[in-house]
Amino acid sequence: MEITERQKAILCQIIEEYAETASPVGSVTLAKLFGVSPATIRAEMARLEAFGLIAQPHTSAGRVPTDAGYRFYVNNLEDQDEQLPALQKGTHVLEVRVGAQSRADAAIRGAVDALVELTGNLGLATIDGQLYLAGMSRLFNQPEFMDNRRVQAVAKLLDNLEPWLREAAPGEPLNIFIGHENPIGRNSEVSLVVSKFRSPYSDRSYIGVLGPTRQNYSKVMALVRHAGNMLEDIL
Image: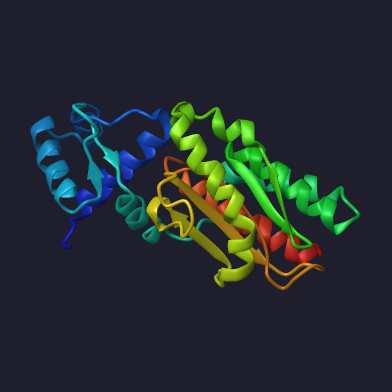
C-alpha cells in the first residue's frame, strides 16, 4: 500500500475530526484545512477508501475511519511526551488520585476512576483476580450506543473480559485492540486499550479503558500508559 504524505495527513484529520464530532467528515471541510479544492480532496479520499482506511456510511457525503484506518493511525503515532500541556492535567489528576491512597486496591481503583473522568470511556483494572469496572454510564452516554444492539454486544464482551485477560495475558506494556481486532466481542465496535503492570497481586495486572473506536487515541494511549507506569512504581 503506497500512501502519500498528503493522504496520511488527510486520514489523520478525518480520524481526529470524527473523534470530536461523531459525524462523517466531508471534502469541503477538509479542502478548507488543506487549502486545495474539494475535488482534489475527493480524489484523495477515493484512494484512502480503496486502501480500506475510510468508508462512506450509508448515503452520507462524508467519510469515517475503518478499523484498518484506526490501526494505521495508531501504528504511526509517535511516542507522546506526557508532559505536553494537553496531558499535564491528566497526569496530575492520576497522580493525585493514586497518591492519596494507602492501600494497593484503593490506588488501582483511584487510577481507574481518574481514567474514566479524563477519557469519558469505561475504566477497568484487574485487582486480585477480579475485574474492577467504572464509568459504565459514561460509556453508554456516547452517541454510538444509542443502538441497543451495540450495548448488548459490549455487555457480552465485558462478561468475558476478565477470563480472557487472565488466559491470554497480553504481554506488551501497552496493548491496543481496535474494533474487530478484539478477540472477544468482535462485533461490538469498541476499542480496548490496556497497560500491563506489576502489582502486589500479580506480575500481570492490567489497567485500561474500553470505548468506541471513535476516540482520541494519542491522549488515551498516553494516559493509560502513564497510569500503568505510575501504579507499578508506587505499588
